[in-house]
Length: 499
Ligand code: UD1
Ligand code: CA
Image (cartoon, rainbow, N blue to C red):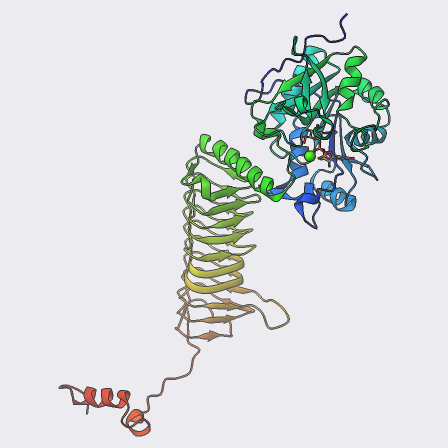
């Protein structure tokens, strides 16, 4: 049998349905320093669309349901390990103390696993957040179907600078080897098909071949890419699979690429939402996290960020210029020019423009939180309204009550926070202070300008303000000759003026 079987002619596969494929193990390489990020944060912990770079790779890998998932950590490993433990408790880590190359990194991972895995082992880099589970599954499926010892995911790129080049046999097109940029000849540098850094291996053959990888290259490192040539020379089948979209395999090295990846991932998320029935008025100015969910006929206006576990129910409308984090917007609710964090907005409720909903805000059905209103840890019942210029903190408001403009729920005595309870069907006056702890009964009215310091029984009118006193003629006496005095004089001379 020929040592160079004519396999490995690229089969384009991305974008279609994912064939079912499994992997015994996935190894994620994330030990590198990522110096080009110029950051105190390890590269793989930088975020796009609400998830770290390595988090995206782990999530895509999880779609294959591998028996083992190992992340190779090194640089700033405590931070990376802590982050991984928080986001996916089943991830194992292998510590690569010195970064002696990608081959050495994979060897470290296999040592962590103990025995070489039986079956397919996928190797991916921790800095490729756009890689999808579908692409990984397709690679694994091609690998198994072709009976390869190794299948490398490749891509044709406009600029191959820095990448390993895929060297193919001129006559058959079979993959012969991967040559690193720094080790490539002039002819090899002209090749535009590159190694994405994603591989499917036969686990046992991978372990064997890694033992034969040498360090006689320009970087003095153990190259994982050498495994391909080693396996081929030993007579095993070596294949390649060409990614449909080269942008999907792009690795993030600096913040320019980080922003580009964010734009692509965001566009992908919004496209999925739109195809599921969400209206996005201006996709270029809307950003959503991977964990945001939508129901059909929700609408997102320009300049809006939807973050965390935010959910838009059917017909909910958000924006323009809003930022919602971990916030649930009920069906047909309207949220305009608002910042909200950890809030729940009821069905048909309205919020804003210019509202700030802090954690623990719960607005009932057809309720209203209006303009220049801040709320925190506040339950506002069905049909109740806080329309203008108010602060409602640590409060419970019943149903169908109206809080007058410019009211403050005075919840802090300088030491502790206290609760205010307002009943149902209340009409509180403008410019009220509710000095907590305090309870206002059902059906209560309060006078404008009141500082309410005592509980108010149901049905009462509470008035708590100084009596008004008018000192007649004060302006003429104290400000003689002023414009005010002249205006007062003129008013007194008008027909019908009081004498
Ligand atoms: C590598 C490939 C190259 C490919 C490119 C794709 C090798 C030798 N080269 O090059 O063919 O085109 O990726 O982006 O494999 N890492 C470790 N431990 C190490 C070294 C690296 O965990 O000792 C990790 C890095 O954190 C990174 C990944 O492996 O996630 C790739 O390493 P990097 O140094 O970026 O490799 P490249 O030179 O880009
Ligand atoms: Ca790289």
